Image 1: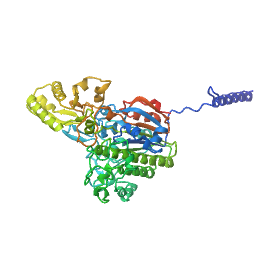
Image 2: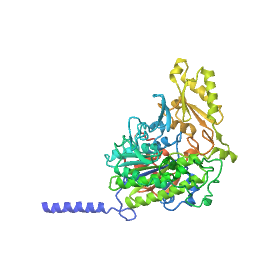
Image 3: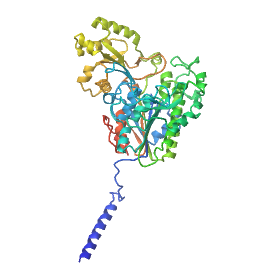
Amino acid sequence: MRKTNLLVLLLVLFTASSSFAQRKGKNGIPEKPKQIAHSPKLVVGIVVDQMRYDYLTRFWNHYGEGGFKRLVNSGFNCKNHHFNYAPTSTGPGHASVYTGTTPATHGIIGNNWYDKTQDKEVYCAGDDTYESVGTSSDAGKMSPHRMLSTTITDQLRLHTQKRGKVIAVALKDRGAVLPGGHTANAAYWFEGGDTGKWISSTYYMQQLPKWVDDFNGSNKIKAYKKAWTTLKDVSLYLESGTDNNAYEGVFEDEATPTFPHSTPNLLNKEKDFEILKYTPYGNSITADFALEALEKENLGTDAITDFLAISFSSTDYIGHKYGVNSKEVQDAYLRLDVDLERILNTLDQKVGVGQYTVFLTADHGAINVPAYLKDQKIPAGYLEMDGNKEKFDEFLKYKYGTTDIVKGISNYQVFLDRKVIDNLDMDLDNVQEEIAFELLGYEGIAKTYTGYQMWQNEYTKGLPNIIQNGWNQKRSGDVIYVQKPGFVSYPRMGSTHGSPMIYDTHVPLLFYGNGIKKGSTTNHTEIPDIAPTVSTLLGIAFPNGTTGRPIGEVLD
């Protein structure tokens, strides 16, 4: 009897398990096990410095099939992607992409800013408590200590008990240090000058790995000290302005800003490697070094997800020098397209097709050269800061009897001396309002806000919201001023950025690879959405200051 009952029980269990195993959907096809997270072998985060969204569309017909077009056609394109804060500059941009929040939370309020507690200007990645590695200069005295929240790279390290590797690479130190986060295995940046090599900080290591020394000792960097010629016939670059115009800067020894660029400093293979940053070759050097890191650090070779953060900085140097409408900018993006194809092809070979995930975005956009816009009868101009400063000082002396009431001005913010205000027995809120009203009357300034307004109100839309997202209670200034659309504080040649205007906020966001759908959206997305989207894909905790939201349409 017992044997019979046991046989019946086993038969029931087998039938139930078989039924469960063969569970089918409505169409009769067996259902796949549910997947709550993806585990690519490698995530590659790419930030292109100063890339406007319309560089995708403007140069589209010149791109090859394997770079930008591959990311767009086989990935997901967020067409209406924006920064939701100002100032729009490199340090805050990289920090916001990787922390999933804005300067109001992560604290990187500019590349440089006046520090109220130290009474001096500070640099977003500077840290004198660490030493340079790979150079005798101070160029390596860097760390992410001023970034107040974690990054997606930090969260990956924590999630994998630090078994997942994080390597960050950029020409600019801040373009590597901030994306790498607080726990990166390594961050490397390029020292130009007369050395031309990749360096780091004792924050990460005591000496450079052998493969970095070998790379620096090779002729790979010197090989790029050559004339900058166009990738294609320059006459085909119809999407850009004339090659010779008054809106572009020139290299040393150049009479005109025209191709080819072949100055003695560019051709000298023994010194002045800084000049490479102002050519597309700086991006190629970055790609070379990133691919070397991929191989030598064995990234993406096991089941534990690694992260390679790459920032292409030369596009920013070139944009500042020549302007967004220049043939130099167009050539830089066509050459970057080739480098992207090279990276993707190498990832296919080294990591495997479908085994990695890529996102590409920018740290800010840029304005067209205002002098050019004015010549096209478009309202634009320049903030005459020297003249404004003289006028502003006269106001301070007349109103308060001293200019000492202002400690500093940076990132379109005025920092006041609280001690002086207290000694003069004045109300801080009133002083902020009086100065804001004064600045509002200056040519080129469209709006002003006070720290009191930022403190007391919660803005949910428009320029006030963008300003507030960039305003940190402990670090930001007492009065914020916003230039008119088309106005900048910058020389007459080249482009710049930093404003809350749409030409500075609208940038690309492309996702590609493992766990990513094919498609696009015109829904409004924001820079802080990137980190929680990647975190959701990986199934890891969001960075601890996250204010963005996952972009659901992107994820497979």
